[in-house]
Image (cartoon, rainbow, N blue to C red):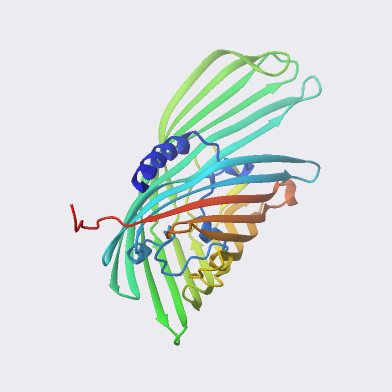
Length: 416
């Protein structure tokens, strides 16, 4: 049954990852867009912390985790995001519903394998300036697309409490932007269309270690490092003189000129370090630190004198509590209760203002009776950006659902 579910959802997400508009943030204009993937629903419900060597949940933050799976695990997640965007004078609301990830983990004794598809970043902005007086300039800017990540990784358990692993990621996607300039009272204006086809490969290495502190308590640790890598962007630019009607809507193309060229971007390296202490299958409190290098993500169509890039950092603290994971009399006691906090400097600087992201999260892990599968619900509330220097502040509320199906594969039949 799980194999049929995997086949159907892999096809569905493969198509949806190209079609979905995964963000409404004006900050997605910069770089490769708004980086949406922050981990599984379970991890995000704890502020991003995922340091335990879990046997039934797939950890997409550290490839060393695959060898700790006890059952074949298939996981898929999606999010409903409601955002209020505001500046000093006005505010707007926007909503998006997106697929976040699809992945499979296969345990093979001391070896574990993981693979999947992640819509990693999204571009989705619409900015309009309509002139009110004759002779005033106006403009329309919009962008769509983003970058996806297909990954394949393996992990090996050197000793029961220590494992290492590695992922190879293939990055691909397309970003399309349109910039239109016009003047009130003038029938013609200009339109610039840009298309960037992205492709590249990067590598991620990880290690996980668990140590007993006493009869009940354990120390959990996680370390992963993603190498800096190159991302090829095959760009097409079309600049045209166009005509408009009285409502400033595009009517026809007068003349056009097209240019094709390549730009090489640099995806930053990334270091993740996490520690936690707790009682296995009972409770955990952990913290995680992420540091990413500056990188070089400015393309020809989104270079701006207002914007620059810096090292990105993220601090997380969170954990979970299970009253009694094997209770036969109370379903509520088998629920996993999660919570966490995060503080992030995204690495984007506009008008000398570092764009920060602060949030609080909660979550529930609902076990499916009669199996090791579970449904995970996550709630995130936070703020990104600022109204200082004429910028945009985004106040968001996210509701996420993750499905984790577990089954036993590769079992030799004893009877025909």
